[in-house]
Amino acid sequence: MKTILANPHLVGALAGLTSALVAASPFGGMAFLTLLSPFPLMVATLGYGFVAGLSGSAVAIFGIAAFSGVTPAIGIGLLVCLPCVLAGTLGALARPANELGGPDETLVWFPLADILMAICGSAALAFVGLSLMDGLGLELADEVAAALAESYRQGDVALPEGFEAQLAALLRNMLPIVQPWGWVLVLLSNFYVALQVARRAGLLMRPKDDWPTSLRLPRIALVPFLIALLASFMPGLTGFLAAGVAGAFGAGFAVGGFAMLHQWSRQHSARFFILFGTYLSVLLFAPLLAGFVIAGLFDTKRASPLSPRPVD
Figure 1 (tube, rainbow, N blue to C red):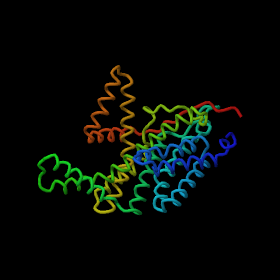
Figure 2: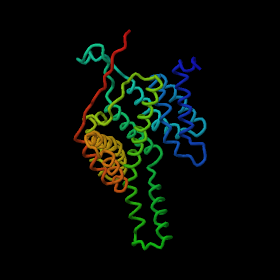
Figure 3: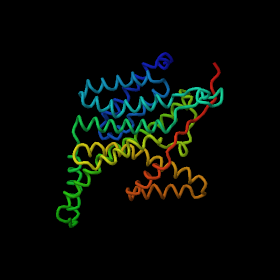
């Protein structure tokens, strides 16, 4: 076992195999496990480096290709492997602080803001790539609209004329935003847990980030977000893909807005009720998310954690 754990290629291969199995969700009725598929590969990359992530990605991609085909293999490569290797490698990256004008005998770690940007960018790239390769998937919006309309009819609810068509059109507009938005949150959640696991296992030297103060997007992230937001108003494929990119980076800015709320609430005794009420309000009225996106736009920064430099 010690020999296996000392070999980053073997650790990465095991992590990649696990991620592929979880992503394929072979267990009936447990498709939600797909949301955990980035976790093994992220832990391996954080703890054993880029080599482990690369080996795990190769195993995951070729394994899925052998059993499910090329398209699903490209899917897991874009959705899981790319962001995991990026986030894991950057999360374990440090350099001497004196190279940046900082104190001696100190390490400065890669900013959490840049890791969040890498996650948003990889989610956007995955959405664009899979949409061009596998179609836009707009039929899902039509199916959901039809199912909702049918459930209303069975409940003897009087629907206005053209309700189903209008609902389908609304869902088609929301689909390219919701998909990458949700995947950014999945990736970020897996990264957070992977950090804790790798640190507790003694695989990661990175100090604990203060997420409420550090979890922001850097200022450069405003460029792709605003360009994509403007392009999303264009008709056809261009607008659809641009909406997905805006959704991915919008999720990053929204996360930054929520982090600001957590930071601000620290000084209040009713912190629990403030946070609970806010999250409940957002769940009940999703358009409130726009306020957190706007808040995140106005607080862009790159905070880097520091730790003592190990003695050679």
